[in-house]
Length: 149
Image 1 (cartoon, one colour):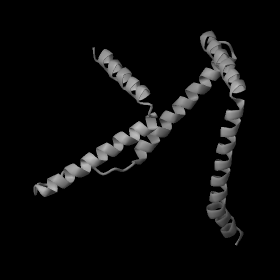
Image 2 (tube, helix red, strand yellow; image 1 turned 180 degrees about the horizontal axis):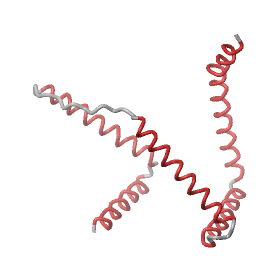
Image 3 (spheres, one colour; image 1 turned 135 degrees about the vertical axis):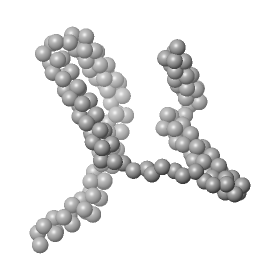
Image 4 (cartoon, one colour; image 1 turned 120 degrees about the vertical axis):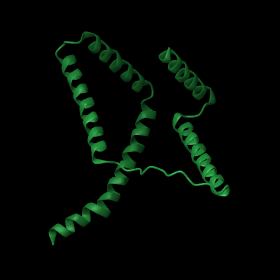
């Protein structure tokens, strides 16, 4: 029952996002901004009524949390590599067929929208190059100078 209700809520939310014309990222940022404003107003109202403010928990990334995320990421990459291995040696025909269909679809879409994709990829490449140059000038070149001394 819970699974049906949660899938209904998710589907309804997805439809609302699609019908509103907003991107998912802008919708999430709007919701976060609304929640921040609500919390700000609640805190000010609490002070206005001379009540005690609730204590917020410390927001800290522990080493254990970071290690768990890294381990989870490692597991996902290993799983992807195992799937690629199975596809290469023909152990999973269904996945092989999905890969073939995906590669045909991607290449057909690229052929159709090649100019747009190349323009976008060039813009991304230029931005990455600018960021690299900035990091190189401000950090890496200083490291080289201190090592040379």
